[in-house]
Length: 511
Image (cartoon, rainbow, N blue to C red; front, side):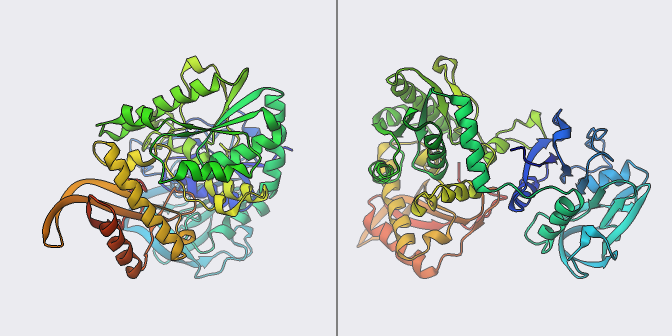
């Protein structure tokens, strides 16, 4: 089945991924592509959305997309920078705003009988984020909406299905943002809302059957949601030709290797557990640089995985649980406007010696979509509700040099924190939680003795897909009990702090 597709052109906005998520929530499939790498098969897209950008259209660095195959030919929605671009280079004018237009605003005027603003009323809250403003509309521009400070908050180009807005409908603070996107995509662009978990499963299983045939596939399971859902999709498609390997890198949570293997027993998957913890910890001993840690873990994992894959006769494919945010965040800064924040463990290819072809069943999905697909596959809700856990494991939650003793300390601290979240019925209210061992010793007193021991930070965030995240306001009583338990039970720790940073500007992990 050929889905309707929406193209999102990325100009470097921090909100571009949010646009994609909002479109997906409407059961419409969309893809993000850099503005300077527009897909050649543009006719396969039913509509186009241009994102915002940190760049000014008035600057020498102004971004110039090639819109010759889009403008006037496809329904086009231009957001923020996109709106200013259409105005500035099509007969209008963009000027520096006398006041920085950032934050909440309300629509004070909406043109009547406009499909674009159907079911959106005067006073609706929107979110502004720009320092320039559209002073004069472009040629054939018609004003659609204003706020008290921004006269040209929305406009359309007569004779085209081209719409432009200076606010961000994709962010939570724009209360009717979803309605606006639905009006544009469904009523104006006539995109069908047929992107559902069940349709994804049916199409993906068929695609996997066609692509893989009778070949054997090896999959590295992590115990997490992504690799587990990928495994179940592959299992549906190729059955016994799927070989799953779960590697203990010595950096898992306390008792996780045994617990995860037990969990997989009831799923019908062919799983082999490999305890390579000593091999990983030997290679990491004393290493403190976070990117070097990632590379060592990646290298040793490939070596271990390659050893095990060679024991499977005739394996031709390697399956990975790569999801869409991994792909987006790992785009090189030279390939588009979004810079790489950090390397992802399951993006970037394999060494030539493995000679395996790659299959990534989930690479089009966001994390929340992966969970919905898992639910449609009737997978265990406890597994689907598991918090994300970084591929490099506790290695990137131990700041500074890594030793076996530090791994032991952090495993004990993490176990107390996670178990308490569960016993207080807080685990499912948190998107991701963990403990970080800091390269800091501090003075303490235990009994009558002075101590000089480690400090740990606890981290708990709420999010939908990890692109943005807010710290969770855990009850003081919970933090007090957890802190006391950690200090009393974990030898080597005498201080506990709680991280109250959001993403952005911080990241969820510390390394």
